[in-house]
Length: 127
Image (cartoon, rainbow, N blue to C red; front, side, top):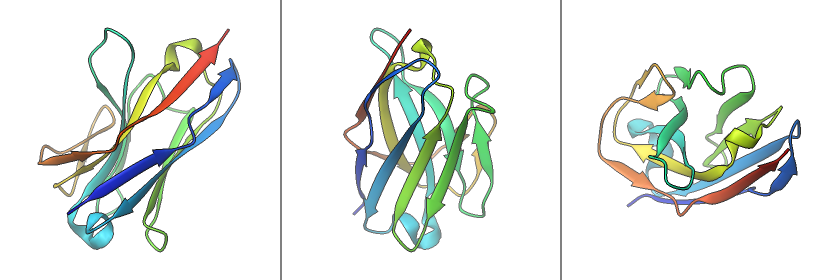
């Protein structure tokens, strides 16, 4: 069973930085899961932000390319999202996901598969 707990969300000014963390328990980091970050703003659909495949492939949404960096520490069973140069449009609830797939696809997503979600962490960016 996979359990995911996000942390690191906060309120920041535009141009600021945050680092989100996702602590995973279970089999997330045993090579079976692509790990990803998604976000959902009020009244908008959930969207993929960044994904880290089993064999190291990485994908970003165009809107965050060059500003966000996804990384994984397998020893700590933790997924990170370093977010720099934050913009008001980055305001959203950010979710960590473990997808039962190995690869990534364009746009910051994992290949399709059964997905487990964390509870989310709120990021608010003010102008």
